[in-house]
Length: 256
Image 1 (cartoon, rainbow, N blue to C red):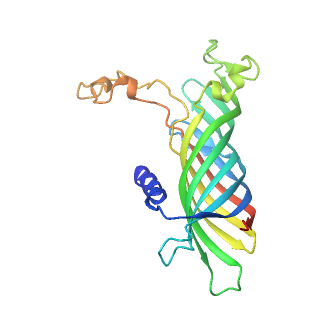
Image 2: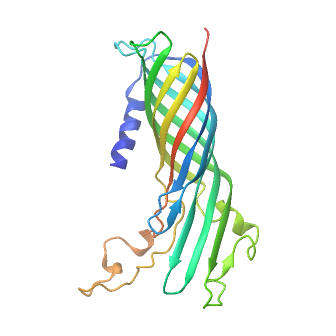
Image 3: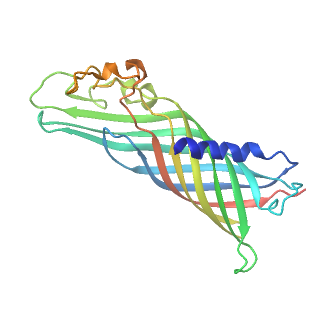
């Protein structure tokens, strides 16, 4: 399903080749919940943040009745993504907890459909948009703490803020800087003010970890190494950036 949505977004962006022009520009500030969708960790969201500007590109000479409604949007955002996480090993009486607070430079390329609401006075619009985002990690903080009273080893008892060095506390020393995602949202515009609700869905796993199930023997005598996927291809860490955001912005037309 993720691949279908991504291909659809790219198809919308590449399908149109008519003459066009930049018609408006604006800025947007968004806040919401941000978390990492990792199947191996219990997680809770942190406060997500978006601040950026954009320009809209409209197909003014496209011979189509919807030509004035369809647009492309190009932007540059500074975004905050991350999560709180926790793991509990009951048999070991061990607890691991921490957080990621990561900042990215984000470039969204969105295809949108904007429609003036006929039942309301002039200046009321609703729009729908989706498209890919390209993200580069700038800086971030990692807190990772594990306590196991019955085991003295450093692998079972540590705190990156106490026992670790500076690199242990820098997120992008431990995870990928590059991410690709999909933004899908709806917006309401009242005159020059805009109000957005959108989903920001990341596709790339933030880390690559060894699969702890490598070599496990199943009941039929086969092992995980007998699968068609090689050991090197398996990634035990499935966490990706996710965010649901509410935004407020202001836009102006580009006068020609």
